[in-house]
Length: 355
Image (cartoon, rainbow, N blue to C red; front, top):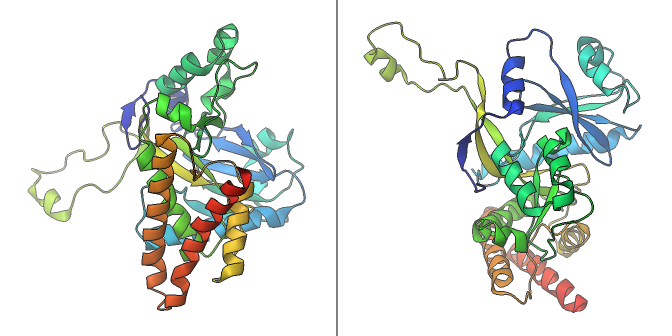
């Protein structure tokens, strides 16, 4: 039902809407989320989102663009694909006179929530989890008295799951229920029989790249479960084409460039607007520890009481150190090798003080 790298077919109305939009000449946009620095709009028929600044704080969105690009470059450099990062396409400043003129449908959709013109950041969209997964989450964690409303709520189609490996506080049956940014705690992840070790290990490597390759504190980033569509790619080599009998169809089975009926579920990292640079010294480590302290509990925590908490932490810490050693080994300075160990020690110290 829900597992990493699983590919499933879906017949949801959401997939049907996206497919139909690919044959229309005029684009359609709708609001799919909101954050502290902006409102997020999706374009039907394409896996793109436009994050629009809700205030005059253009620099926050520009920082998002810069840090997103920097971290994505390091993910590519180290050929790390086990945590997906959305493609970061381009930035539009507030004073650009052309963008909203060229996209009147977006301007119309955004007018009620943003003061236009405003700055915009265009990135790849993390698609929602498939319909069957969403229904399963509602059936399992939504209170019976509001289950019918949750199943019929259009907003619940925009379902991304926040992965809280550092919390065992997951509950069901609350007064309110939403699948937008659904918080899935470690005890619920175990309950759903998801691969905790795989996710903890991937988070460890991702954090090491963000800290020691991108040289950032990874402040306020999010790890979520979401999906992506199957996209048309160049699948045949020149040698393969030479073997064909003549002109034949070689495109995707769906006959569209982006197949929204076929989805792959992945662990993703996103939201880089608060990320700050760090120095390669003790002060940088302290900044990274502080960022982890104030963030939501995505990362496993040390000193847990249960076996699964210990397993998640040990895997995270081990993968973090291994990846950091590989990254810092390229720097040629042995004095740097202590820094990732100081970060892990710092997280342990934080937890000891809480106890």
